[in-house]
Image 1 (tube, rainbow, N blue to C red):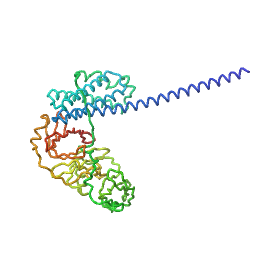
Image 2 (image 1 turned 180 degrees about the vertical axis):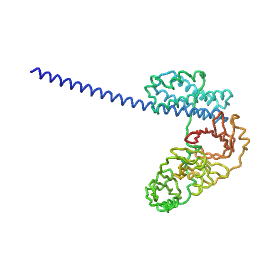
Image 3 (image 1 turned 60 degrees about the horizontal axis):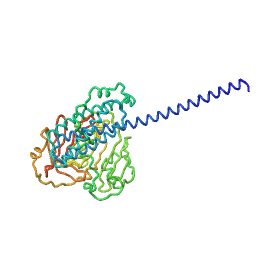
Image 4 (image 1 turned 60 degrees about the vertical axis):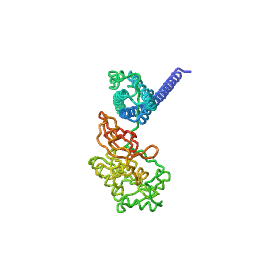
Length: 450
């Protein structure tokens, strides 16, 4: 065998070995990248859940600070105990290696233990003492600090300014400096505990699934009759064509679904008409809104006038959410000064020209009816006297609120504030019982309640 042949075979072997090493290295690198991506996704999900639970804890602590009803306070404190435990679960899944992690865990554990002990005190018939309320206020202040810190970290993570490797090693983050330099948990006593809650788009907006749909009146109609209802709703002079998408039998309200082509317009328009009674359940005009020219007050009046024109009289704006230059306003039925929250309609309004982009009437169709009101057993003065003395009252009226059992409660509604935070407090007109407390959150995206 010649030396040239041996040299060629050696070169080929070296090339093959090098190629194999490169391929093996690339494969190992790819596996590691996939592993890191999966871990980062898991960390981000855990962190998002932690932030949500801590935000809820802060809101429920705020409620607990002003509750005067043993029953309602016990429910609130029990929820704090439950949700703080969930916050701890997600905290344990986050790879932070600094003192702030252990201090946060200590704080959540303390809040959990303390809220549980207070809830047992309420359930056993005991009253919360002034010192208990002072502790709850202290916990709430610490929780606000924690909430702000987590929200700051959240902004840095989602903007890409820092990643999980940075956090794991504590590299140059304002969060790490804040936790190391300002130990906000060091003065919390060992017997204190924690709490949290749920944010949604307005007072009593998630009550629509009722078994008996008392507002869904009239006889059953067929598809052709439903199509005529679409023409009446939009105005036949504006319609080029109507196409049926079929009957939605399993919808919350069984309905006929239509796509509408408007004259001289390209946007998609859809309308759902209930089989029973031929009511408009939902409509949606798919139009991009690129600017904001009209105010929220103007949008409120535009929506109210639109509802009146469509046969929904005496509606009152309550809460709203703004997204992409479109505002969704919740309107509740105003029954001679009584705000009836179950009779809810949502209207989407374009903020460039005030055009109505959609309507959703499920709550109203489920609940609207003529109601007979009993004479209140207590006066509004008596109801006001039962409130926490720290609540600075801004407005008061009467309201109907729904319950989780699909019933309704006649209440006095008080809007007020404590230490800069706004609340709605509901006192039963029949019994004087504190039925509910909602925290009002004014955000850039709208007015929310917790």
